[in-house]
Image (cartoon, rainbow, N blue to C red; front, side):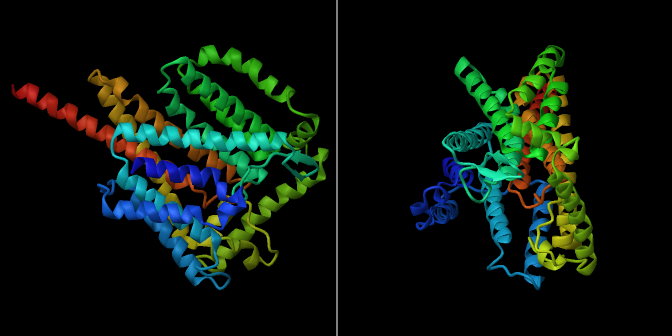
Length: 409
């Protein structure tokens, strides 16, 4: 089952059916998912992992369903965001019922990174061959797919996925593993640079600073960072430097002022939509229709209340609570195992949880300039973290039982 899940990951992230259009007519992704579900129902050993995050995801799913059904602007047949999120939910269920051991988790998370690396590498190759978007007065890199390939979306995905290197570094055993990590890291930096996405560029800075400050090797990394960060700016093309200068100097480009004002307007319009439909909102991606201007919110904190209403807000806040609560439990398990001399056995699962928290922080930051409330990342990383916690709990229970038997003897 694990390898079926990994195959779907690649199809979902790389989306070859959006690159080579003849594949699109075959609906490969749908056929593949149907095959997975048949195998899952027929032969897979399945048991839903017991974790509080299931409740949060369930409430958010209910909010998506109610909001779409009750909206006067859309329906469950035509709403792409609703359909896509339900696909994410199915995959979440497959992962939560199929990945049980630490070995399985290592395989899935590692292949998750490799699949995205292939997608990035293909996108970079196409950029070098002349495939790009021209927007806001500059050339901007895009992903090879059409669904998540816009400069802002591609940049955001790249930054968030960069945190998945944290657990991957725990598995480095030889120079080839280390080389892959270095290449992935540098390619990620270059891709974010070339997207011209200001929010992704700032999120990248937060990510890199966080990696340095929270590393146990921070004293060694600080001098390196002092050289690396300026170099990151120097190697940028001049047109992209002008683009990023608008972060602190909007006068460089007047479109920056309009863009920032649009984000703020998205927040207030979202609150107005929430007020007009307080229980289930106006419907996923119906912000612009309900507001009358036709634009999406471009602001997470206006998107969720305005489009999903109070039910969506409750589900989203519960999801955030579960991230933190699960991470605290992970830390407690690690502390116990370390006290018993088994600290190294908890390092990988702890790294998965740290990567999850980091990804969520970046998603919340990116939400200040984007409507990313329905991104697959929210619940996929929640599944990885929940599985990591379950593995640690099992290890702690085994240690406690061994200690009890030793005391009885």
